[in-house]
Image (cartoon, rainbow, N blue to C red; front, side, top):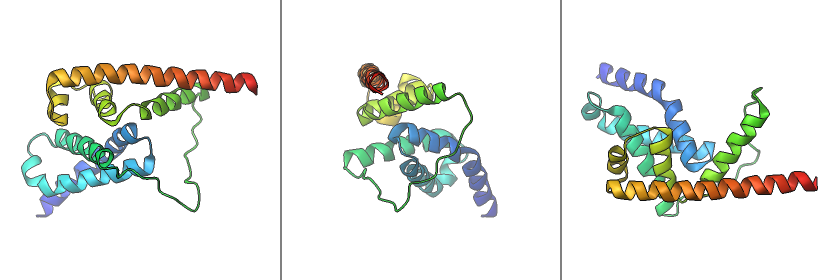
Length: 172
């Protein structure tokens, strides 16, 4: 049993940050992303003996996306009130690039959840259409249409955010 737990602990250590980043791309909130990632690992642990020898990363990714969609489908995504604002890490990277990345992530949050999941799996994770269809439990044609609609929605939301940002700069 110790080997079983150690294998899972090693996988968890190696993949948690990537799972949390994927969850953040889906939900746009670091606290919710951590909850989604943790929930995915809890479900993975229950299936670890069967999954460990196969595609554990694929199972984790599928579970993560399905948990995200489940929270949106059932209206469970709620704001969490906290006494203090969570601290954000300070980065000394190029601020223009960070602003652009934040604008893109904000625009991604305006895309409907299923289209957002399709975008993240297909574009961010570079999965083939057939594998995305398997994760989302739909046909390849549905993935293609969701991807097309998601890209249109993302472009529109990004343009809106960019236009709003420029008008704020012009006023200020």
